Amino acid sequence: MKNSLHIFFLIFASFFPLFGESDLPRIDVQSLVTDFGYVDYRAMNTKQIVFTNISEKKARLYYYMPVTPPFSGTIPMYDTLLTNESKVYNVSFSPRKFGIENQRLFFRAENYTSNAIALLFDVSGSMNEEMTDKVIKLEGAKKAGLSFVDNMKFNTDEWDEAAIYTFSSGFTVRQQLTTNKPALRTAINNMTASGQTSFYFALDTTCSLISSSSFTRVIVALTDGVDNDNRGYTPDKVIAKAKARNIRIFTIGLGTSVDDFNMSRIASETGGAHFKAKSSKELIDIYNDLVFKYLIFNKEFFFDLAGMCKGPYSNLIGGKDTVFKTGDTSKFEFYIGNLTKQIKPGDTYKIYMHFNPNLLVPVLDSSITYNYDGKLILSGKFDSTMLYSVLVKGVNNKLDVNEILTEPNVNNWDSLLLSGIRFVQLLGNEPCTVLHLDSVILNDGEIYTVIKNGLFTICTKTCNADGIRLFLSIANSELFLAQNNPNPCNNTTTVEFGLMEEGYSSFSVYNALGEEMFKTNDIPQKPGKYSLPIDVSAFPQGIYYYVLKTPSRNLSNRMQIIK
Image 1 (cartoon, rainbow, N blue to C red):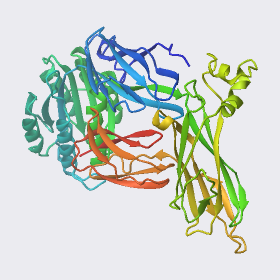
Image 2 (cartoon, rainbow, N blue to C red):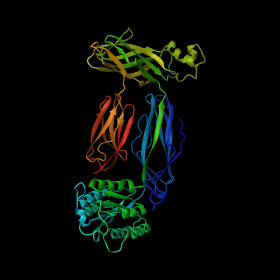
Image 3 (cartoon, rainbow, N blue to C red):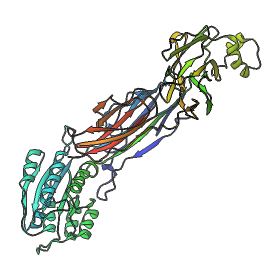
Image 4 (cartoon, rainbow, N blue to C red):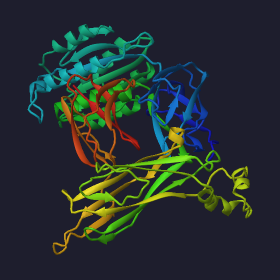
């Protein structure tokens, strides 16, 4: 595996004909995949990831979730890059188990852009009618407008300003361009509906009012009808004026009695977009999309971290599909692989396992102590005969085991049989027991091996009341993390997930800045399918990411919260 890719991420939100590439964030990421290759157990390999801002404007990077073990790094949750500035982040891989590990990191790149936004509302008499969800059109428009204002950018580096204009037979300035959100909310709440629809006249007037702003100029225009003004204003005049003054127009048609053709043409020819809504929810979604997708030059992207552990690993091997009666015995063997030169004759090992003592009892000898509590430790030492059986295959037929142990080319030994154990099958007090290989420890803790395969299920199969048992490996568990439902959500939502192994698991929700908003450790610790209800009523509106952390993998997904 090599780390030789060099990828240019040209980050585009959408292509707007009135705006050049200088408006769009472009980030050069050194490598799409940072591949650490094979790394020894508990060793560490560190690589560098380089981000360069090749935009003409300062760029902001948001990292949706932190780097998690076995990976670690210096990547912050939020960072800023000046034009042509590069930043180097160190990322490390230190495996704690055998096999392949990977993590996908999600980012959002955003240019520093402030907008002057004119919210233009139709307040003609027909806005007093109901939508398909029985909500009055004007009330739905107010809710959507208030949501838009709440989500406007406002910080020390950039901010949006907005104006509230309405039209019917005439045109009314309810609030000129301002960053004062309470004033904007008051202007929206005070809207009332009556009169005709002078849509093109209102668009033309709005272009004039915001054309002096030094910010990126945008009009968001909503109407539920066809222009019936007789003052000679046309779509062509509106388009020409907007282009001349570098203004993007987004149009929203509410209901079915609108002029979709001309509204679409005005939007497309000025660099905006046309939307249609029939309900209050659809209207709110459109205004939220305008804030989070269309009025910010940004794009989500990701890259991957990957690596593989070389071991040492431990393996539990047992009979497969073996049927035996109560009183018969089943045999298990314990192997260790990917050993290194640090193992030598005289080194010790301990094998820890547990099981249901009512279903299994070990066949003991003088070297094994068992308290009939379902917990068993097998211990022993490596000897020359054990090691020789593994080493002799790769060292030019040398027969002296001491020479073999000092051979410099022997640094990754094959699988080695450590020990075996037999169990007598009991009638038991339940259908199944799981035989767990918990850990294999070398030299009293100097080396902890990782478990490659350490879980078997022994189940009861009743055949003519003779107590026959069937020994099976686990086959029916699935690890997954489903999309939350409902999504978008505003009060509560439910996430379904599946676990395929026992062990500590947790569930967290992060906001777009990577801040942990919710965490629960009250996750079932056994394989199976589960559902988790989440109360999001106190969360601000926006995009969130939820993460399920299990002993072997981390899974993530995205949810949207609307108010």
